[in-house]
Length: 255
Image (cartoon, rainbow, N blue to C red):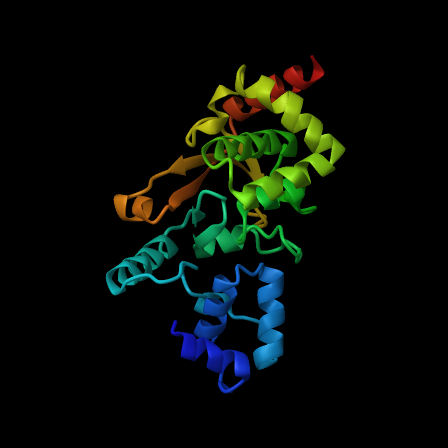
């Protein structure tokens, strides 16, 4: 975007706001979904339309990269399984319809919506425990992911801010400093590797209900070059493996 274009937007010269322009502005300012919705109501007096959202909030992409992302958006939206792209902060940069369907009943939250940041949702959103069954296991996994990201990007202010929020909550702080390290170096060593342990997840569709959920990472080189990772939530029938894992977790926490 040129300086002149932005200046026109700021001075109110532009009177007609398209969804694409508003989503680009929200992406450039790193707005949460709550802030984005407020922006739409202020600019066009209505709620945003998610299906018109720019597929990835990434500034200054060349034409070939944008074409690839558009095609990739079409591809993952054709999948029946929830799939999403994240950056190193676990900000969700693209999500398909199955992902949105999974979290369709999640109440609005200023900074912990699942389509904004998956770690923040699991750690801080009050609705997370309704969908992420066995929430303690999910929290241990997400705290392990946060710690791993901080090891690689120790000067990242956004990750540091997330860790500060963890420290503010006494239960999360104890889990982060004591339970999570002991678990990841012991029975939960594969928490850091997608495709490892099966989690439990409760789908809002009554026909699906309680499901097993395995994280599968499959990231082509063009996405890697953009600093993005694709994660697919493979939903399966609940099985003994998930039950055994939860028993291991219970035994660990009781020890």
